[in-house]
Image (cartoon, rainbow, N blue to C red; front, side, top):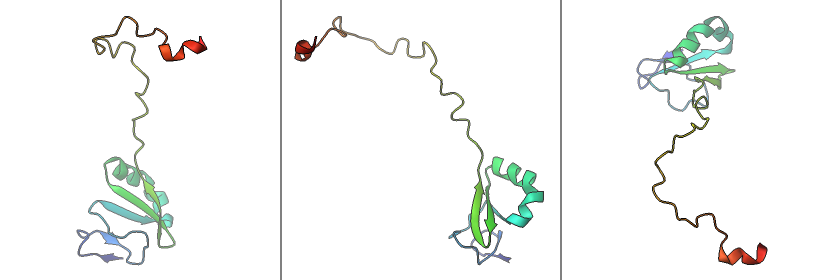
Length: 102
Protein backbone atom coordinates (compact mmCIF):
# COMPACT_ATOMS: atom_id res chain seq x y z
CA UNK A 1 0.00 0.00 0.00
CA UNK A 2 1.21 3.47 -0.83
CA UNK A 3 0.00 6.98 -0.23
CA UNK A 4 -0.66 8.67 -3.55
CA UNK A 5 0.33 12.37 -3.60
CA UNK A 6 -2.67 13.30 -5.78
CA UNK A 7 -5.22 11.28 -3.83
CA UNK A 8 -5.28 13.43 -0.73
CA UNK A 9 -3.22 10.95 1.26
CA UNK A 10 -5.68 8.09 0.73
CA UNK A 11 -4.12 4.65 0.87
CA UNK A 12 -4.34 2.61 -2.31
CA UNK A 13 -2.60 -0.27 -4.00
CA UNK A 14 -0.79 1.00 -7.12
CA UNK A 15 -1.44 -2.31 -8.88
CA UNK A 16 -5.23 -2.13 -8.67
CA UNK A 17 -6.62 -1.90 -12.14
CA UNK A 18 -9.91 -0.24 -13.12
CA UNK A 19 -9.20 2.62 -10.71
CA UNK A 20 -7.82 5.32 -12.99
CA UNK A 21 -7.90 8.19 -10.51
CA UNK A 22 -8.64 7.66 -6.85
CA UNK A 23 -11.02 10.28 -5.50
CA UNK A 24 -10.74 12.08 -2.20
CA UNK A 25 -13.50 10.03 -0.52
CA UNK A 26 -12.62 6.55 -1.70
CA UNK A 27 -12.08 3.57 0.57
CA UNK A 28 -10.65 0.47 -1.08
CA UNK A 29 -10.62 -2.85 0.72
CA UNK A 30 -9.57 -6.34 -0.36
CA UNK A 31 -12.30 -8.98 -0.29
CA UNK A 32 -10.53 -10.92 2.45
CA UNK A 33 -10.52 -7.80 4.68
CA UNK A 34 -14.03 -6.60 3.87
CA UNK A 35 -15.98 -9.24 5.83
CA UNK A 36 -15.12 -8.16 9.36
CA UNK A 37 -15.23 -4.48 8.35
CA UNK A 38 -18.54 -4.66 6.47
CA UNK A 39 -20.70 -2.75 9.01
CA UNK A 40 -18.21 0.13 8.99
CA UNK A 41 -17.94 0.05 5.20
CA UNK A 42 -21.72 0.22 4.89
CA UNK A 43 -21.78 3.22 7.22
CA UNK A 44 -19.15 4.94 5.07
CA UNK A 45 -21.14 4.25 1.88
CA UNK A 46 -24.30 5.62 3.51
CA UNK A 47 -22.29 8.71 4.45
CA UNK A 48 -21.52 9.38 0.78
CA UNK A 49 -18.08 7.86 0.62
CA UNK A 50 -17.06 5.75 -2.38
CA UNK A 51 -16.38 2.22 -1.08
CA UNK A 52 -14.70 -0.24 -3.45
CA UNK A 53 -14.01 -3.90 -2.68
CA UNK A 54 -11.22 -5.42 -4.77
CA UNK A 55 -10.48 -9.00 -5.73
CA UNK A 56 -7.14 -10.03 -7.22
CA UNK A 57 -6.00 -6.40 -7.51
CA UNK A 58 -9.08 -5.48 -9.59
CA UNK A 59 -11.95 -3.33 -8.40
CA UNK A 60 -14.76 -5.87 -8.13
CA UNK A 61 -17.64 -4.28 -6.23
CA UNK A 62 -18.71 -0.76 -5.31
CA UNK A 63 -20.95 -0.26 -2.28
CA UNK A 64 -23.64 2.32 -2.96
CA UNK A 65 -26.69 3.26 -0.91
CA UNK A 66 -30.07 2.13 -2.18
CA UNK A 67 -32.02 5.21 -3.17
CA UNK A 68 -35.57 5.78 -2.05
CA UNK A 69 -36.45 7.08 -5.52
CA UNK A 70 -38.88 4.21 -6.10
CA UNK A 71 -40.60 4.64 -2.76
CA UNK A 72 -42.89 7.52 -3.70
CA UNK A 73 -43.64 6.72 -7.34
CA UNK A 74 -47.34 6.04 -6.89
CA UNK A 75 -49.50 8.79 -8.35
CA UNK A 76 -51.21 11.05 -5.88
CA UNK A 77 -54.90 11.38 -6.65
CA UNK A 78 -55.76 15.03 -7.24
CA UNK A 79 -52.15 16.16 -7.56
CA UNK A 80 -52.86 17.86 -10.93
CA UNK A 81 -56.03 19.61 -9.80
CA UNK A 82 -56.11 23.08 -11.32
CA UNK A 83 -53.30 22.36 -13.78
CA UNK A 84 -55.55 22.05 -16.86
CA UNK A 85 -56.96 25.53 -17.27
CA UNK A 86 -58.88 25.04 -20.53
CA UNK A 87 -60.36 22.04 -22.30
CA UNK A 88 -62.46 22.32 -25.47
CA UNK A 89 -66.06 21.07 -25.29
CA UNK A 90 -65.40 18.64 -28.15
CA UNK A 91 -62.11 17.41 -26.69
CA UNK A 92 -63.16 13.74 -26.80
CA UNK A 93 -65.32 13.95 -29.96
CA UNK A 94 -64.32 11.67 -32.86
CA UNK A 95 -61.96 13.28 -35.37
CA UNK A 96 -63.17 13.79 -38.95
CA UNK A 97 -60.15 11.89 -40.28
CA UNK A 98 -61.31 8.74 -38.49
CA UNK A 99 -65.00 8.87 -39.54
CA UNK A 100 -64.60 5.83 -41.83
CA UNK A 101 -63.61 3.70 -38.79
CA UNK A 102 -66.67 4.47 -36.68
